[in-house]
Length: 425
Ligand code: HAM
Image 1 (spheres, rainbow, N blue to C red):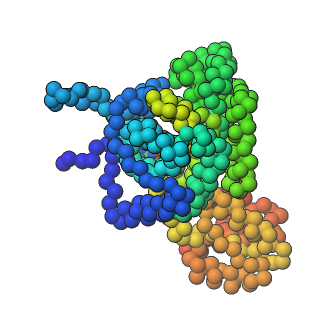
Image 2 (tube, rainbow, N blue to C red):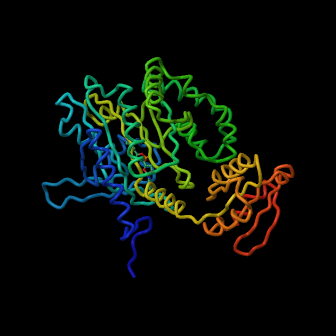
Image 3 (cartoon, helix red, strand yellow):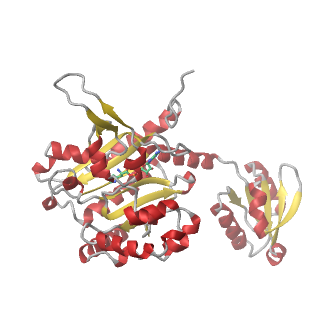
C-alpha cells in the first residue's frame, strides 16, 4: 500500500470543517484590519532562504527540502530550488520584485498556505504544515518602523484568536535589538560563554562560537543554571531600540493586551530585529508555540531590495486547530466533581477548592451551603458528576475531605494533596 509520506497527513471531513471555520473567521478579521491576501509560490530559489532566513539557522542548515532542478532546454539554466519553509522571505521577495514600495504606502499582506520543514514529526510538528501569516512592510516614510505597527499587529492577533475562540494563550514578548546593538550583545555572550561552554551540551558549545544568541534557546535541563547567569539583552539595547520597545509596551498596556517579557525568547530565524513574540498554549504540550513573529527591519536590504522595515507573524494552523479541538473536548468533558459546602460559612472554602481543581483542568461544579445534603447529592446525580466532595468545618480543620464516588457509592477520605490524583485517576 502506498501511504502518505512521513510527516504529511490527509485532512478529511469532518475535520476539514474546523479548518474552514478558522480560515473564514481569520479572513474576516484580516479584512477589518485592512489586510489583503498575497499568494506566493510554494517553491523559491534556495538562495532566498539561505540569505533571508540565515545560513546558521536550523531551518536552513538542516530542515529544507532542496533539490537541483536540471535544465531541460538550452535556454534554461539549472538551479537549486527549495520548498518554502516559511513565507516571510517569499513575501519580501515579491515586495521587491513588484516594487510594492513605490506607492509610498504600507503593504498589509496576509497568507494562508502550506510550508515545509524536515523536522522530526510528532504531535503538532509536521513536515508539511499550514501557516496563517501576515506581514506589514513599506518604506520608512510610510511609518513601517513605528511602534504603532507592532502594537496594532499584536492587537489584531488577539482579535484573530478571539474570532476563532481560542482562550488560555500566553503572549511572550522580547526585543532582540538591531544591527547596531546586537553585535555588542553577541560579543558579551561570547565572552561570558568562553569560560562555561565546556560544561554545556554539544549544540551550545558549537553555537557559543557560531551564533551565541541561539544558546538562549537551549532546552537541556543541565544547561539552564548557566544560561540564567548569562548577560541579558535588555542591558545591551541601544537608545533607539530601548525607546521603541518601551513605546510598544506602553501601547499594549493601553490596549489591555496582556504579555510577559521573556528575554530568552530569540526565535529560530535570523532576520529579526527589535520586537519578537510568541503565543503559547498549554494544550499543545512540547510544541506549545501556536504562533510566532517579529520585526525584520533589515530583511529587504539583506536580499537585495530597498530599505523596507516590516513586522509580521505566522500562526501554525495545525497547532491552532489542535488547541481548539482540545478546548472543545474539555468543554464537553463530563462533570468530574460536585463540591458540597456543609453549613454556614463553608461556601468560600468550597469555592476556593473548586477553583484549585478547575485550575488543574478538572471539571467542577459547586452546590450551596444552604442546601440540605440530600438535595445536593440529588443534584450531583442529575448532573452526572463522578464524585461528590464534602466541605464542612471538620474537613477544613483536618485538611482532609470526604470524597464519595457516586458511581460505586464508595466513600473515602483524602488529604488536600491527594485529592487531585484521586480525581484524575
Ligand atoms: P516560525 O516560528 O518558524 O516563524 O513559525 C511560526 C509558527 O508555525 C510556529 O509558531 C508554529 O506554530 C508553526 N510551525 C512551525 N514549524 C512547524 C511544524 N514543523 N509543524 C507544525 N507547525 C509548525 C515563521 O515561520 C516566521 N515566518 C513568522 C514571521 C512572519 N515572522 C515575521 N513574519
